[in-house]
Each structure stands twice: as C-alpha cells, then as structure tokens.
Image 1 (spheres, helix red, strand yellow):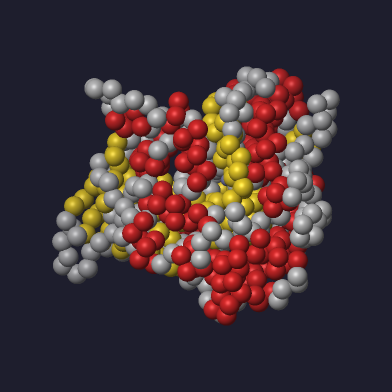
Image 2: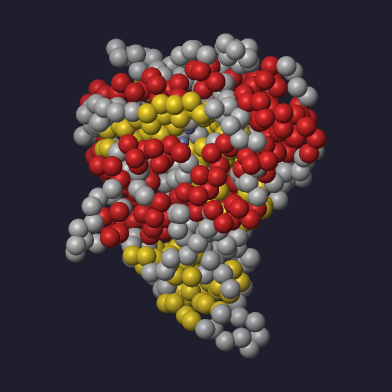
Length: 554
Ligand SMILES: [Zn+2]
Ligand SMILES: [Zn+2]
C-alpha cells in the first residue's frame, strides 16, 4: 500500500528542511522516497497549502504508574464525569487535568502527538505503569525507571561499590522494568525523608546512608553514559519549589562533571530569594549556565493558570506542599525499597504573586535558552498544567504581543519582577518543530522518530496554517500514525496500539548474585517476579511491538 501526501509545506529540522513544498510517500507504515518503477499509488491525499511535520513527542508526561491512578481516584470531580444519555462519550471522559488512559491517548493523538514518555516509573511498580500506558491508545510509549532513592543503590554507594557493579545494576533495572532511560528524583532526598530529614541540599549527606545528592547524580550520570544509553540521566534536582533553589540547580549541573544530563521541569528549579517576598526569578542565571554547558538538555515544566493536580515521586516535596493543596486533600506515601509518592491538587492563579512569577519564569527560560535543540516543551503534565494546554503554550512562545497581553493581566508585582516584557524573541514554526519533534527524538535515541526522512515511522501531522498558532496546533487536519489516518480535525477516526520503546544495555548477570538475596531479605517480591519478561510487557502494554533502540558506542 503506497500513500502520497501531496503538496504540503514540509518542516523537518532533522534534515534541515524548512518550509519546502514537496510530496511525502508512505509504504507499509514507513516513509519512503517514492514509488518504485511502475508502482501504483494507492491513495493520494491533497495537502496543498498545509504544513507537514513529524508526529510530536512528549518526553516528560505522567501518563502511567501508581501516582497517576491515585490522582484520578483522589479527584473524581475532575477525572470522571457521568456519561448521561445523549452526551458525547469523548467529551465526557476527556475533561480535567488528569484524564483517563483512553482520553489521554485520544487527546494527545488529536493534537498531533504520536509518542509519550512516562518519566517516573518505579521499578517495583513497572508492571502497573506498563498496564496503564498500554491502556493509553494510539501513541507510542516508553518510561524512565526511577533510581537514586532505592535502598540497593544507596547501600552500594555507601559501601563504596565498584562503578562496574553500579553500571550492571542500572542496566539490570532497565531490562527488568523495560525502561528507555533512568530518572533520579530529589537524589537521596526521598530516602532521607524516610529517616525524618525534611530537606536535603546537594552536598548534605542522607542521614542513614551518608551519601550526598551530588554523589548520586554523578554516579548515575556516569553509569548511564558508560552503558551507552542514548538518553542522558533525567534529573529532577534537589529542593524543587524552594526559593533560592537556583544554587542547588547550578550545583547539580556541576555534579554531572561534564557528562550528559537532562534537567527536567527546570522552571520549578529556577528560583531566587530577591525582593520583598524573598521569591524571585533566577531564570537568567540558569539560562546562562545551560547555554554555556553543551552537555545539558532541559525541559521547562511551564505552569499554566487553572486547576491541576501535582503527582511526584518526591514525597519530601509533596509533604511540604500538602498545605497548599486546592482542593485541600492529599496523599503522600513511601514505596518500599524504591522511593515515594505524593499527590496534591493545585490551582495556579494569575493574580497570585508566586504563581504569576512561576508562569513568567518558565517563559523566561524558554526565551533565554538559545538552542531549541536543548530545551523541550513540557508542562510536566499534570504538575504545571495539563498537556492539553500545549497549543496555548506554543502561542505564548510564538506571539510576543499575545504574551505581553497576558503579562499585563497577571499579578502586577510579579510582572514587574520578571524580565519577560523585555524579551522580544518569538519562536518560529521551525523552532517549534525542533523542540517538539526532532530534538526529543534525538535526545531519546529514537532514530526513526521525530523526522520525515526515508525509513522513519510514518507519523505525519498535517496542519492548516492559521494566524493563531493555538488554533493551528490544537486541531491538525490529519494525523497519521504508522501510516494510518488516526485523527482528523480533532476527531479520532481509528484506534490503534502504540509500540513500547526501550533500551537494553549489555551487562554482567553476576550482579544477580547480589540482588537475589537483597530481594529475598527486603522486598515484598522475589527478584524473579520483579523482572518483567518481553512477552509480559507486550501483553500488559497491549503493544504490537517492543522496540529496542541501540546503545551508543562507548
Ligand atoms: Zn519530577
Ligand atoms: Zn514530572
């Protein structure tokens, strides 16, 4: 079956194609150069005057795992609507900041997203995470396994284990949980919380293990790099949300010692202590450091005004946040030997000084970090706001006068303290395509995603140009997933199943001689049942394909 998408203006930054009118061809779910000699075109779609991009990739969105489900259960008023006779089922299930699995898959697809990555999969909970991701239709999925608060790693670091063993353990976890990367959340801090520490600075030792966040970040970044895992260590830095945490963030960059590192939801880690309220933007200092450090990539975690729910592995943070919950209910828990979990609903208000400044800080980061290949578009869904707000966020980046109008309507003291009014940068469509497609594919090691070259997965989004980017990005005319039309002008027209993306670095199985007795002694499940087989992950992930991406040569 050969399909032709005719006459679109193609924007494909991975091949430095910027707004060039050309035909695109798809055979059996893959991009191809064109018909073979004498080959008939089975179907032609007239895309004249439209804009074609590869399917978008969200590299940090909480769509699977225990805390997502807890958030749904805690907040039935947002996630569940009664389906009354005569109501549109999709509209009924799609509301709220924490959509159901089905609604998440449909809404991502309708916006032109074709792959989503869950950033906080606890290895002990990987089965459930894959089950929930598997229940999310159409989009491809992958997950980062959470390490850096697990008792095994901390005990190994505390007793000075050989870096080779750390590497073997990291690789073993990636295999066992079917991860594509490793994330560390508040390195050592979630463990410290269990020993009654209520904060942990980058050079402060965990009370029990006497290991510091700096050590943990450095050793994990090294292990991930030496294993050849394409995605650098994904880091939720220390002291999230705390005024003055700019110092922790800069110390975390330094802790990587030049190794690749990805700093996530950077907005929440870019705060100073200036001004009467002792809360200020440190975006300029952070952006300067990121611009000067080519080993660093970031995603922003932009906050959006309105109701949402925060869900994090960082129980230390969420315990601190609980008193700010709106509505006033919360859950914080420890997760056996792995980490923790906290769910707190939030309502970000534009008239609130802190919230308004957080909003401005996120935009400052987007506009001050110069290289769109190293800064990614996220709201840390649902923590800064639901992913459904992405088209609005794109408009804020592309349209300076719109941005300034919003700036004029927020808390005036916050607006005054922000540098935003002076930033006249406007993102181009080409830069949006980089930060939402080409760059996330590259930083994750997805060689056949995020571009429209020959051999790529035929994930193609056809947009109708519009003076309002929010309108353009909210409802593309057509979304093709693996060559099949799945959405048209905001409506789902076919339901398919996405692949699971993983990386499986080589390692020495000898590490199991240490792990097996550890599991027997401390875990509620044995090492053998902790590990998920390929067949099981495909079955619970409802995935037709488990894609194993190659590691990089060392
Ligand atoms: Zn995080
Ligand atoms: Zn997150």
